[in-house]
Every structure is written in structure tokens, then in C-alpha cells.
Image (tube, rainbow, N blue to C red; front, side):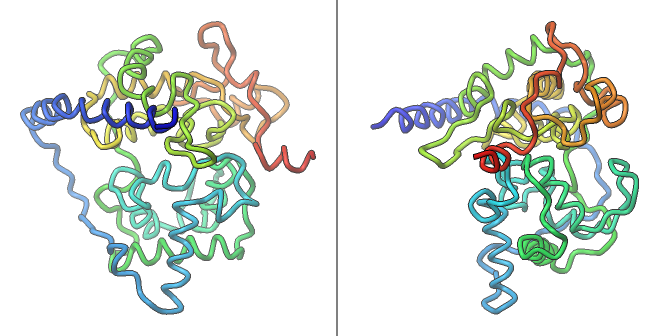
Length: 315
């Protein structure tokens, strides 16, 4: 067995050993009483029901771009994340910003850029920020395929309605202010086995098995996951992988804070200085960009945005 296989086997064994703890956490959550969600539920079609037609061919292209983004949209991706890194189960999983729930809400006004966005523009932002790359043209075949895939996932869903499971889970404010030290302990116990002790992720050869959470191979400071609330909600609902619900709300907030208290690629909207960029784009308790954590000003030592796209252009 090669070293990578041994590491992945240890990761699998560690996750399996945590199953009992997950069961206890789920029992405790049930005892606390259910939270009512009045939004309508929706179940997207299964992969097995993909149509065998010219339309279905484009749906499949979109699915493959979603699952293997660097391979199928290489000229727009600056890191090695996939769309499915943050939108689990090929964009189907509720509370993981599922694609079927997003599709029915666009066009929509977004405070992030201060105007109504088409779905194409929203996806362009994903490439620019989450993929640390560059935006495809609105009529590029990559965006056409992704939108077709999303349209198919949302088949028969009500239009203009916020559906149950849309976006990321919105957690109540933590009982204690999110804390770096507590977050590092949660990370070491539950996250490092898959994502690495330095957040670098794990890959088998050139194939990434678990994504980088910070550092040069991760999403940049403009991505939505750098916001502590988004990260905490995603973690609470979906992590550890296969053991969702294991962490309590406080642990989710703490580990989200810890994850986002590290450097990552620079915000491509950077304006003159870290301070001015924070004031313009990050002036919120939800962002640690431009704040000093453990003696380091976040954003002051960020790698340039663009990742491997910029590196390739420089050769």
C-alpha cells in the first residue's frame, strides 16, 4: 500500500470511528426539539433519470464540469477546487447551497455587487472568487452547460420561491464569541485527518481527494465561504463528511473562525491597500480580512489572485 493510500485508509477509519459520537449528537439534537421550516420541500431528479437526448448531452456536460471543474473548465480555474467541493452531492444536497434551489431564485439583487444579477453573472463570480480564476463570457459553452444542468436539477420546482435547504444553514449567533484556540482544537480532532494539519487538503497523484481550506490552493478572499457565517452553516450541516450533525453550533462557529483566520489568495477586487479593500468589501463582523489575528494582518501576505492561471501566463 502506497503512503497516500495509507493516509486515506487512516482518514476513512478515523471517520468510521466517529460514527457513535455522531449518533449521540443527533440524539441530543432531536431531544432539543425540531425547528420548524415552513419553506416548501423539493427533491431534484436523480442522475439515473438524465434524458438520453441532445438536451441531456448538455446536461451531462454541465454535470461533469460541476464535478471535475479544473479538468473541464481549465482556462477559467486557478485552483484545484470543483463546484462540488462546496455544493455537495453534485449540487443536490440541501443546506449545501444546492443548485436546484439557486436556479429558481435568479435573476436576483445581490448586495455583493449592488445590482440585479443574472444566473450567468452569479456563476461568473464563482469562477472569479471560489475557483480563484477568471470569469467565462456569459455565452461561453461552460456557462451554458452549467445553467442547463441547474435547470434540469430544478425540474418542476416552483419558480421564485425559497425552497427548504436553499443556501447554507443559518446558525443562531454563538453562545460564546467564535474563538481561534477552540477552533484549532475542533479542527485537529475532526478536520485535519482529511484536510491536512495546515489546511492544504489531500490529493492522490494529481487528483484532489479533499480540498484545501486555506493557502494558495484554496478559494480567495472574495469567495462567499470566507464569510464565517457561511462556513459555520456549511460545516454544521455537512461536516465531518459522512458524519453531518456531529459538531454542535459552537464548535461549527469556532472551527469556521479558525479556518478563515488563515491567509488565502488575495481578493481580486483589491483596492490600493488591505485597509481600503476591507472598508470597501469586507467591513463586517463576518469577515476576518484586514484584521490582525495572532499578530498577522490577514490579507497582507496573500498570494496574488488567479493561481495557476497567472503562473501559466508568466511562463
